[in-house]
Structure formats: structure tokens, C-alpha cells
Length: 452
Image 1 (tube, rainbow, N blue to C red):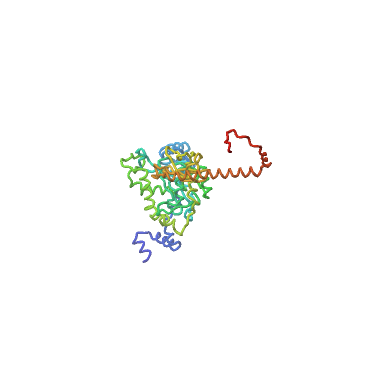
Image 2 (spheres, helix red, strand yellow):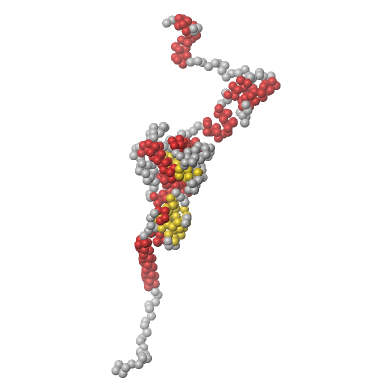
């Protein structure tokens, strides 16, 4: 079709159509894009007036466009500058760089959160990096006195697979104890056969809270050959994955439980206990979260953690892990009827050899049915409370333990006595004195018969 007829049919000037064809042949479709105006952003007002408007807009607290317009109008009249309209002033304010406005009005911290470049770190294998954090749940539960309270959740997440390594709910404010107990649960193999995540991480990544920067945790990291890494002070952006997990728990688990209440909501009438909430969270993690395909990795967390036949690095023994991570340590004396602690009595047959000795006990505040007993940093036994554990030590077993201890002590006494006699006999300087000659016997004082 001739270009002239096409221009007439579509109502386009022939010169415009010819210019379009020329641009298309020279630059392709990019040549047909609408070009910005050459005077775009230009203004007839002097640069000093523009700078005045922008400077007023960046003040703290930020003034309104109307207030800026009134002040600028006064200055423009004094200097003989063109009078800007309100729309012009508002347009100049809107054209300001958002980063510049944020830094001026909201400060450096907000600017860092909004506009600073972020280094995105990626773990290359399971257990390379673990993240840990605490959050207070938007859920009301019953405490031991049936009072409504909001619990705290401590979670440890594997950075590579997004799988949950450790999970613990508590009514206490987050402290080093909660961190240590959760880390212990995360490292050791789980009692649930469907929860496989365990082992010692290469790096333990947390914030700068006092519960994560304790001297005890530094000693634990050195003994386990684990690196401690902390986010920058006041900049928690590097722990976005653990924060996203908390949102997932809130959106997919807590909202369906009795007692769910976002901030500002009164406690409902039907609420769970701490043990019931713990069971619900473990069920959600094992049956739902670990099996759900993650939007970023494209794999389920459990599948991604197990891929490639990964073998986790485990501690030498459970007792070693308890010694490192259980921070609740108390000094107690072993009595004849066991160890007394918090009004309870703990007993084990091993303690028969340590009656009267001072020992260190370590325990899990969530389970005081048993305590772990250490003597001079050496693990002795797990002593049980008969009232809580539901087990008792029989009288015959107790008698056998007492007799064995008594025999052991008597044998040790005999060995010491034999050593004394041996050493005294070897180092004797003079031979024993000779016996005196027997003298004539004295006449008996008793009467004797004649025929004797």
C-alpha cells in the first residue's frame, strides 16, 4: 500500500509517516519509541529558587507543600524571581530522590534498611550455617497456674535446606539457657524417626543479644569446633530466613489453634497448655513444613537436607554434649539417701561411692525427673527422682551397692596397711633385740598335791 494512501486512511500527516519509516529502517522498533521531551525537567525558575524549595522539603520535621509555597513566595518577591505556583512547588518536592528524603527525614538506620546494598549469603551444603533467633508468639496459652500468657519460641534453622534443626517453646524471657537447650536438641539425633536433622553446624549465626554472646557459648563453640558469627549491631537483615520461618509458623500453624490473638487482641476463653502447644508445633514442622516445597529452593526442606547422602558430624557422646550445653549447673553434696534438690530426692546406685562428696548437677528445666551428676568434670550417672520418674531402686539393689562399696573400702584399707608394713620393714635400721635368757621359774603360789 502506498504510504500516501496509508497516511490518508489513518489520518496521519504524510511527513510524520515518512519520519516513522525512516526511524524504523535506521533503528528498528526502538526508533519508533516515544522520545522524551528535550526540555523535560527544565524550568524557567532560577537554580537558587529550586534549591530553596528542595532544602525546605528536606528539613526535619518535613513541612507541607503549602508551607513551602508560602515561604518560597516571600523569598521570590524579595529577590524579584518568578512566582512559582503551588503545583510547581509540589512537583519539585515529588521529584526529590526517595533515598535522599529517607535519609533526611527518617535517619541513617531506616536508610540502611531501605536502600543499602545487602550481601546475600548462600550455604553450599547442609549444616554449613545454622541461624537461631527468638520470637514471642501471637498466641495465648495457660501457665502452671492457669493464667493466660504469651510464650516465646526459640528456633534453629539450617540455612541450606531451610529445615528446622531445633525448636523449643518456653514461658521465660529468652536467655542463654534457652539457647543452650535448643542447640543441644538441634545437635543430637531426634527421638522422632521422621525428623532427621541433627549434627554440629560449621557456623552458628545469630544476632548480638546477650543470650547469644555469652562466654559459655564461646566455650561450647570452641569445644565443638563450631564458628560463631553475629549480624551487625542493629542490622538484623542477614537473618531474614529465620524471620520468614516465624511468619510461616504464624500464618500456617498458630492461626488455626485455640488462643490465637494478634497484637491488641484480648485473650480468648479457649487456650492450650504449654505441652499441647509444643506438640502442635512439632507436628507442624515434621508433617507440614518439612514436606512442603520451598518457594526459593524448589525442594522440600527435609528432602534437600538429606540429598546427596549427607552424614552429619556428631559429638563423641551424649554426656559430652550435656556437659557443654546444659548451663543450669548446681553444686550439691551427696547424702546417704541421695542428692537433695528443689525439695526432691535423686538417687542412683553409682552414688554409693560418693556419699559425703560435693558434685555438680546439671538438669533440663523442662524435665526435672532426672539430673546428670558430674564429679570433677567427669560424668558419673543420671540420678532419678522416684516421685517424678515413676521408678524406684529396690532394697536388695541398695544393699548390694552398699556392700560392694564397703568391700571396696576394706580392700583399699588392706592395701594401704600392707604398703605401710612393707615400707617400715624395708627401712628398719637395727635388727630386733635378742631375747633375754630364761630365769628359773618362780615357785607356784597355789598348793599342790603331794603325789605331783
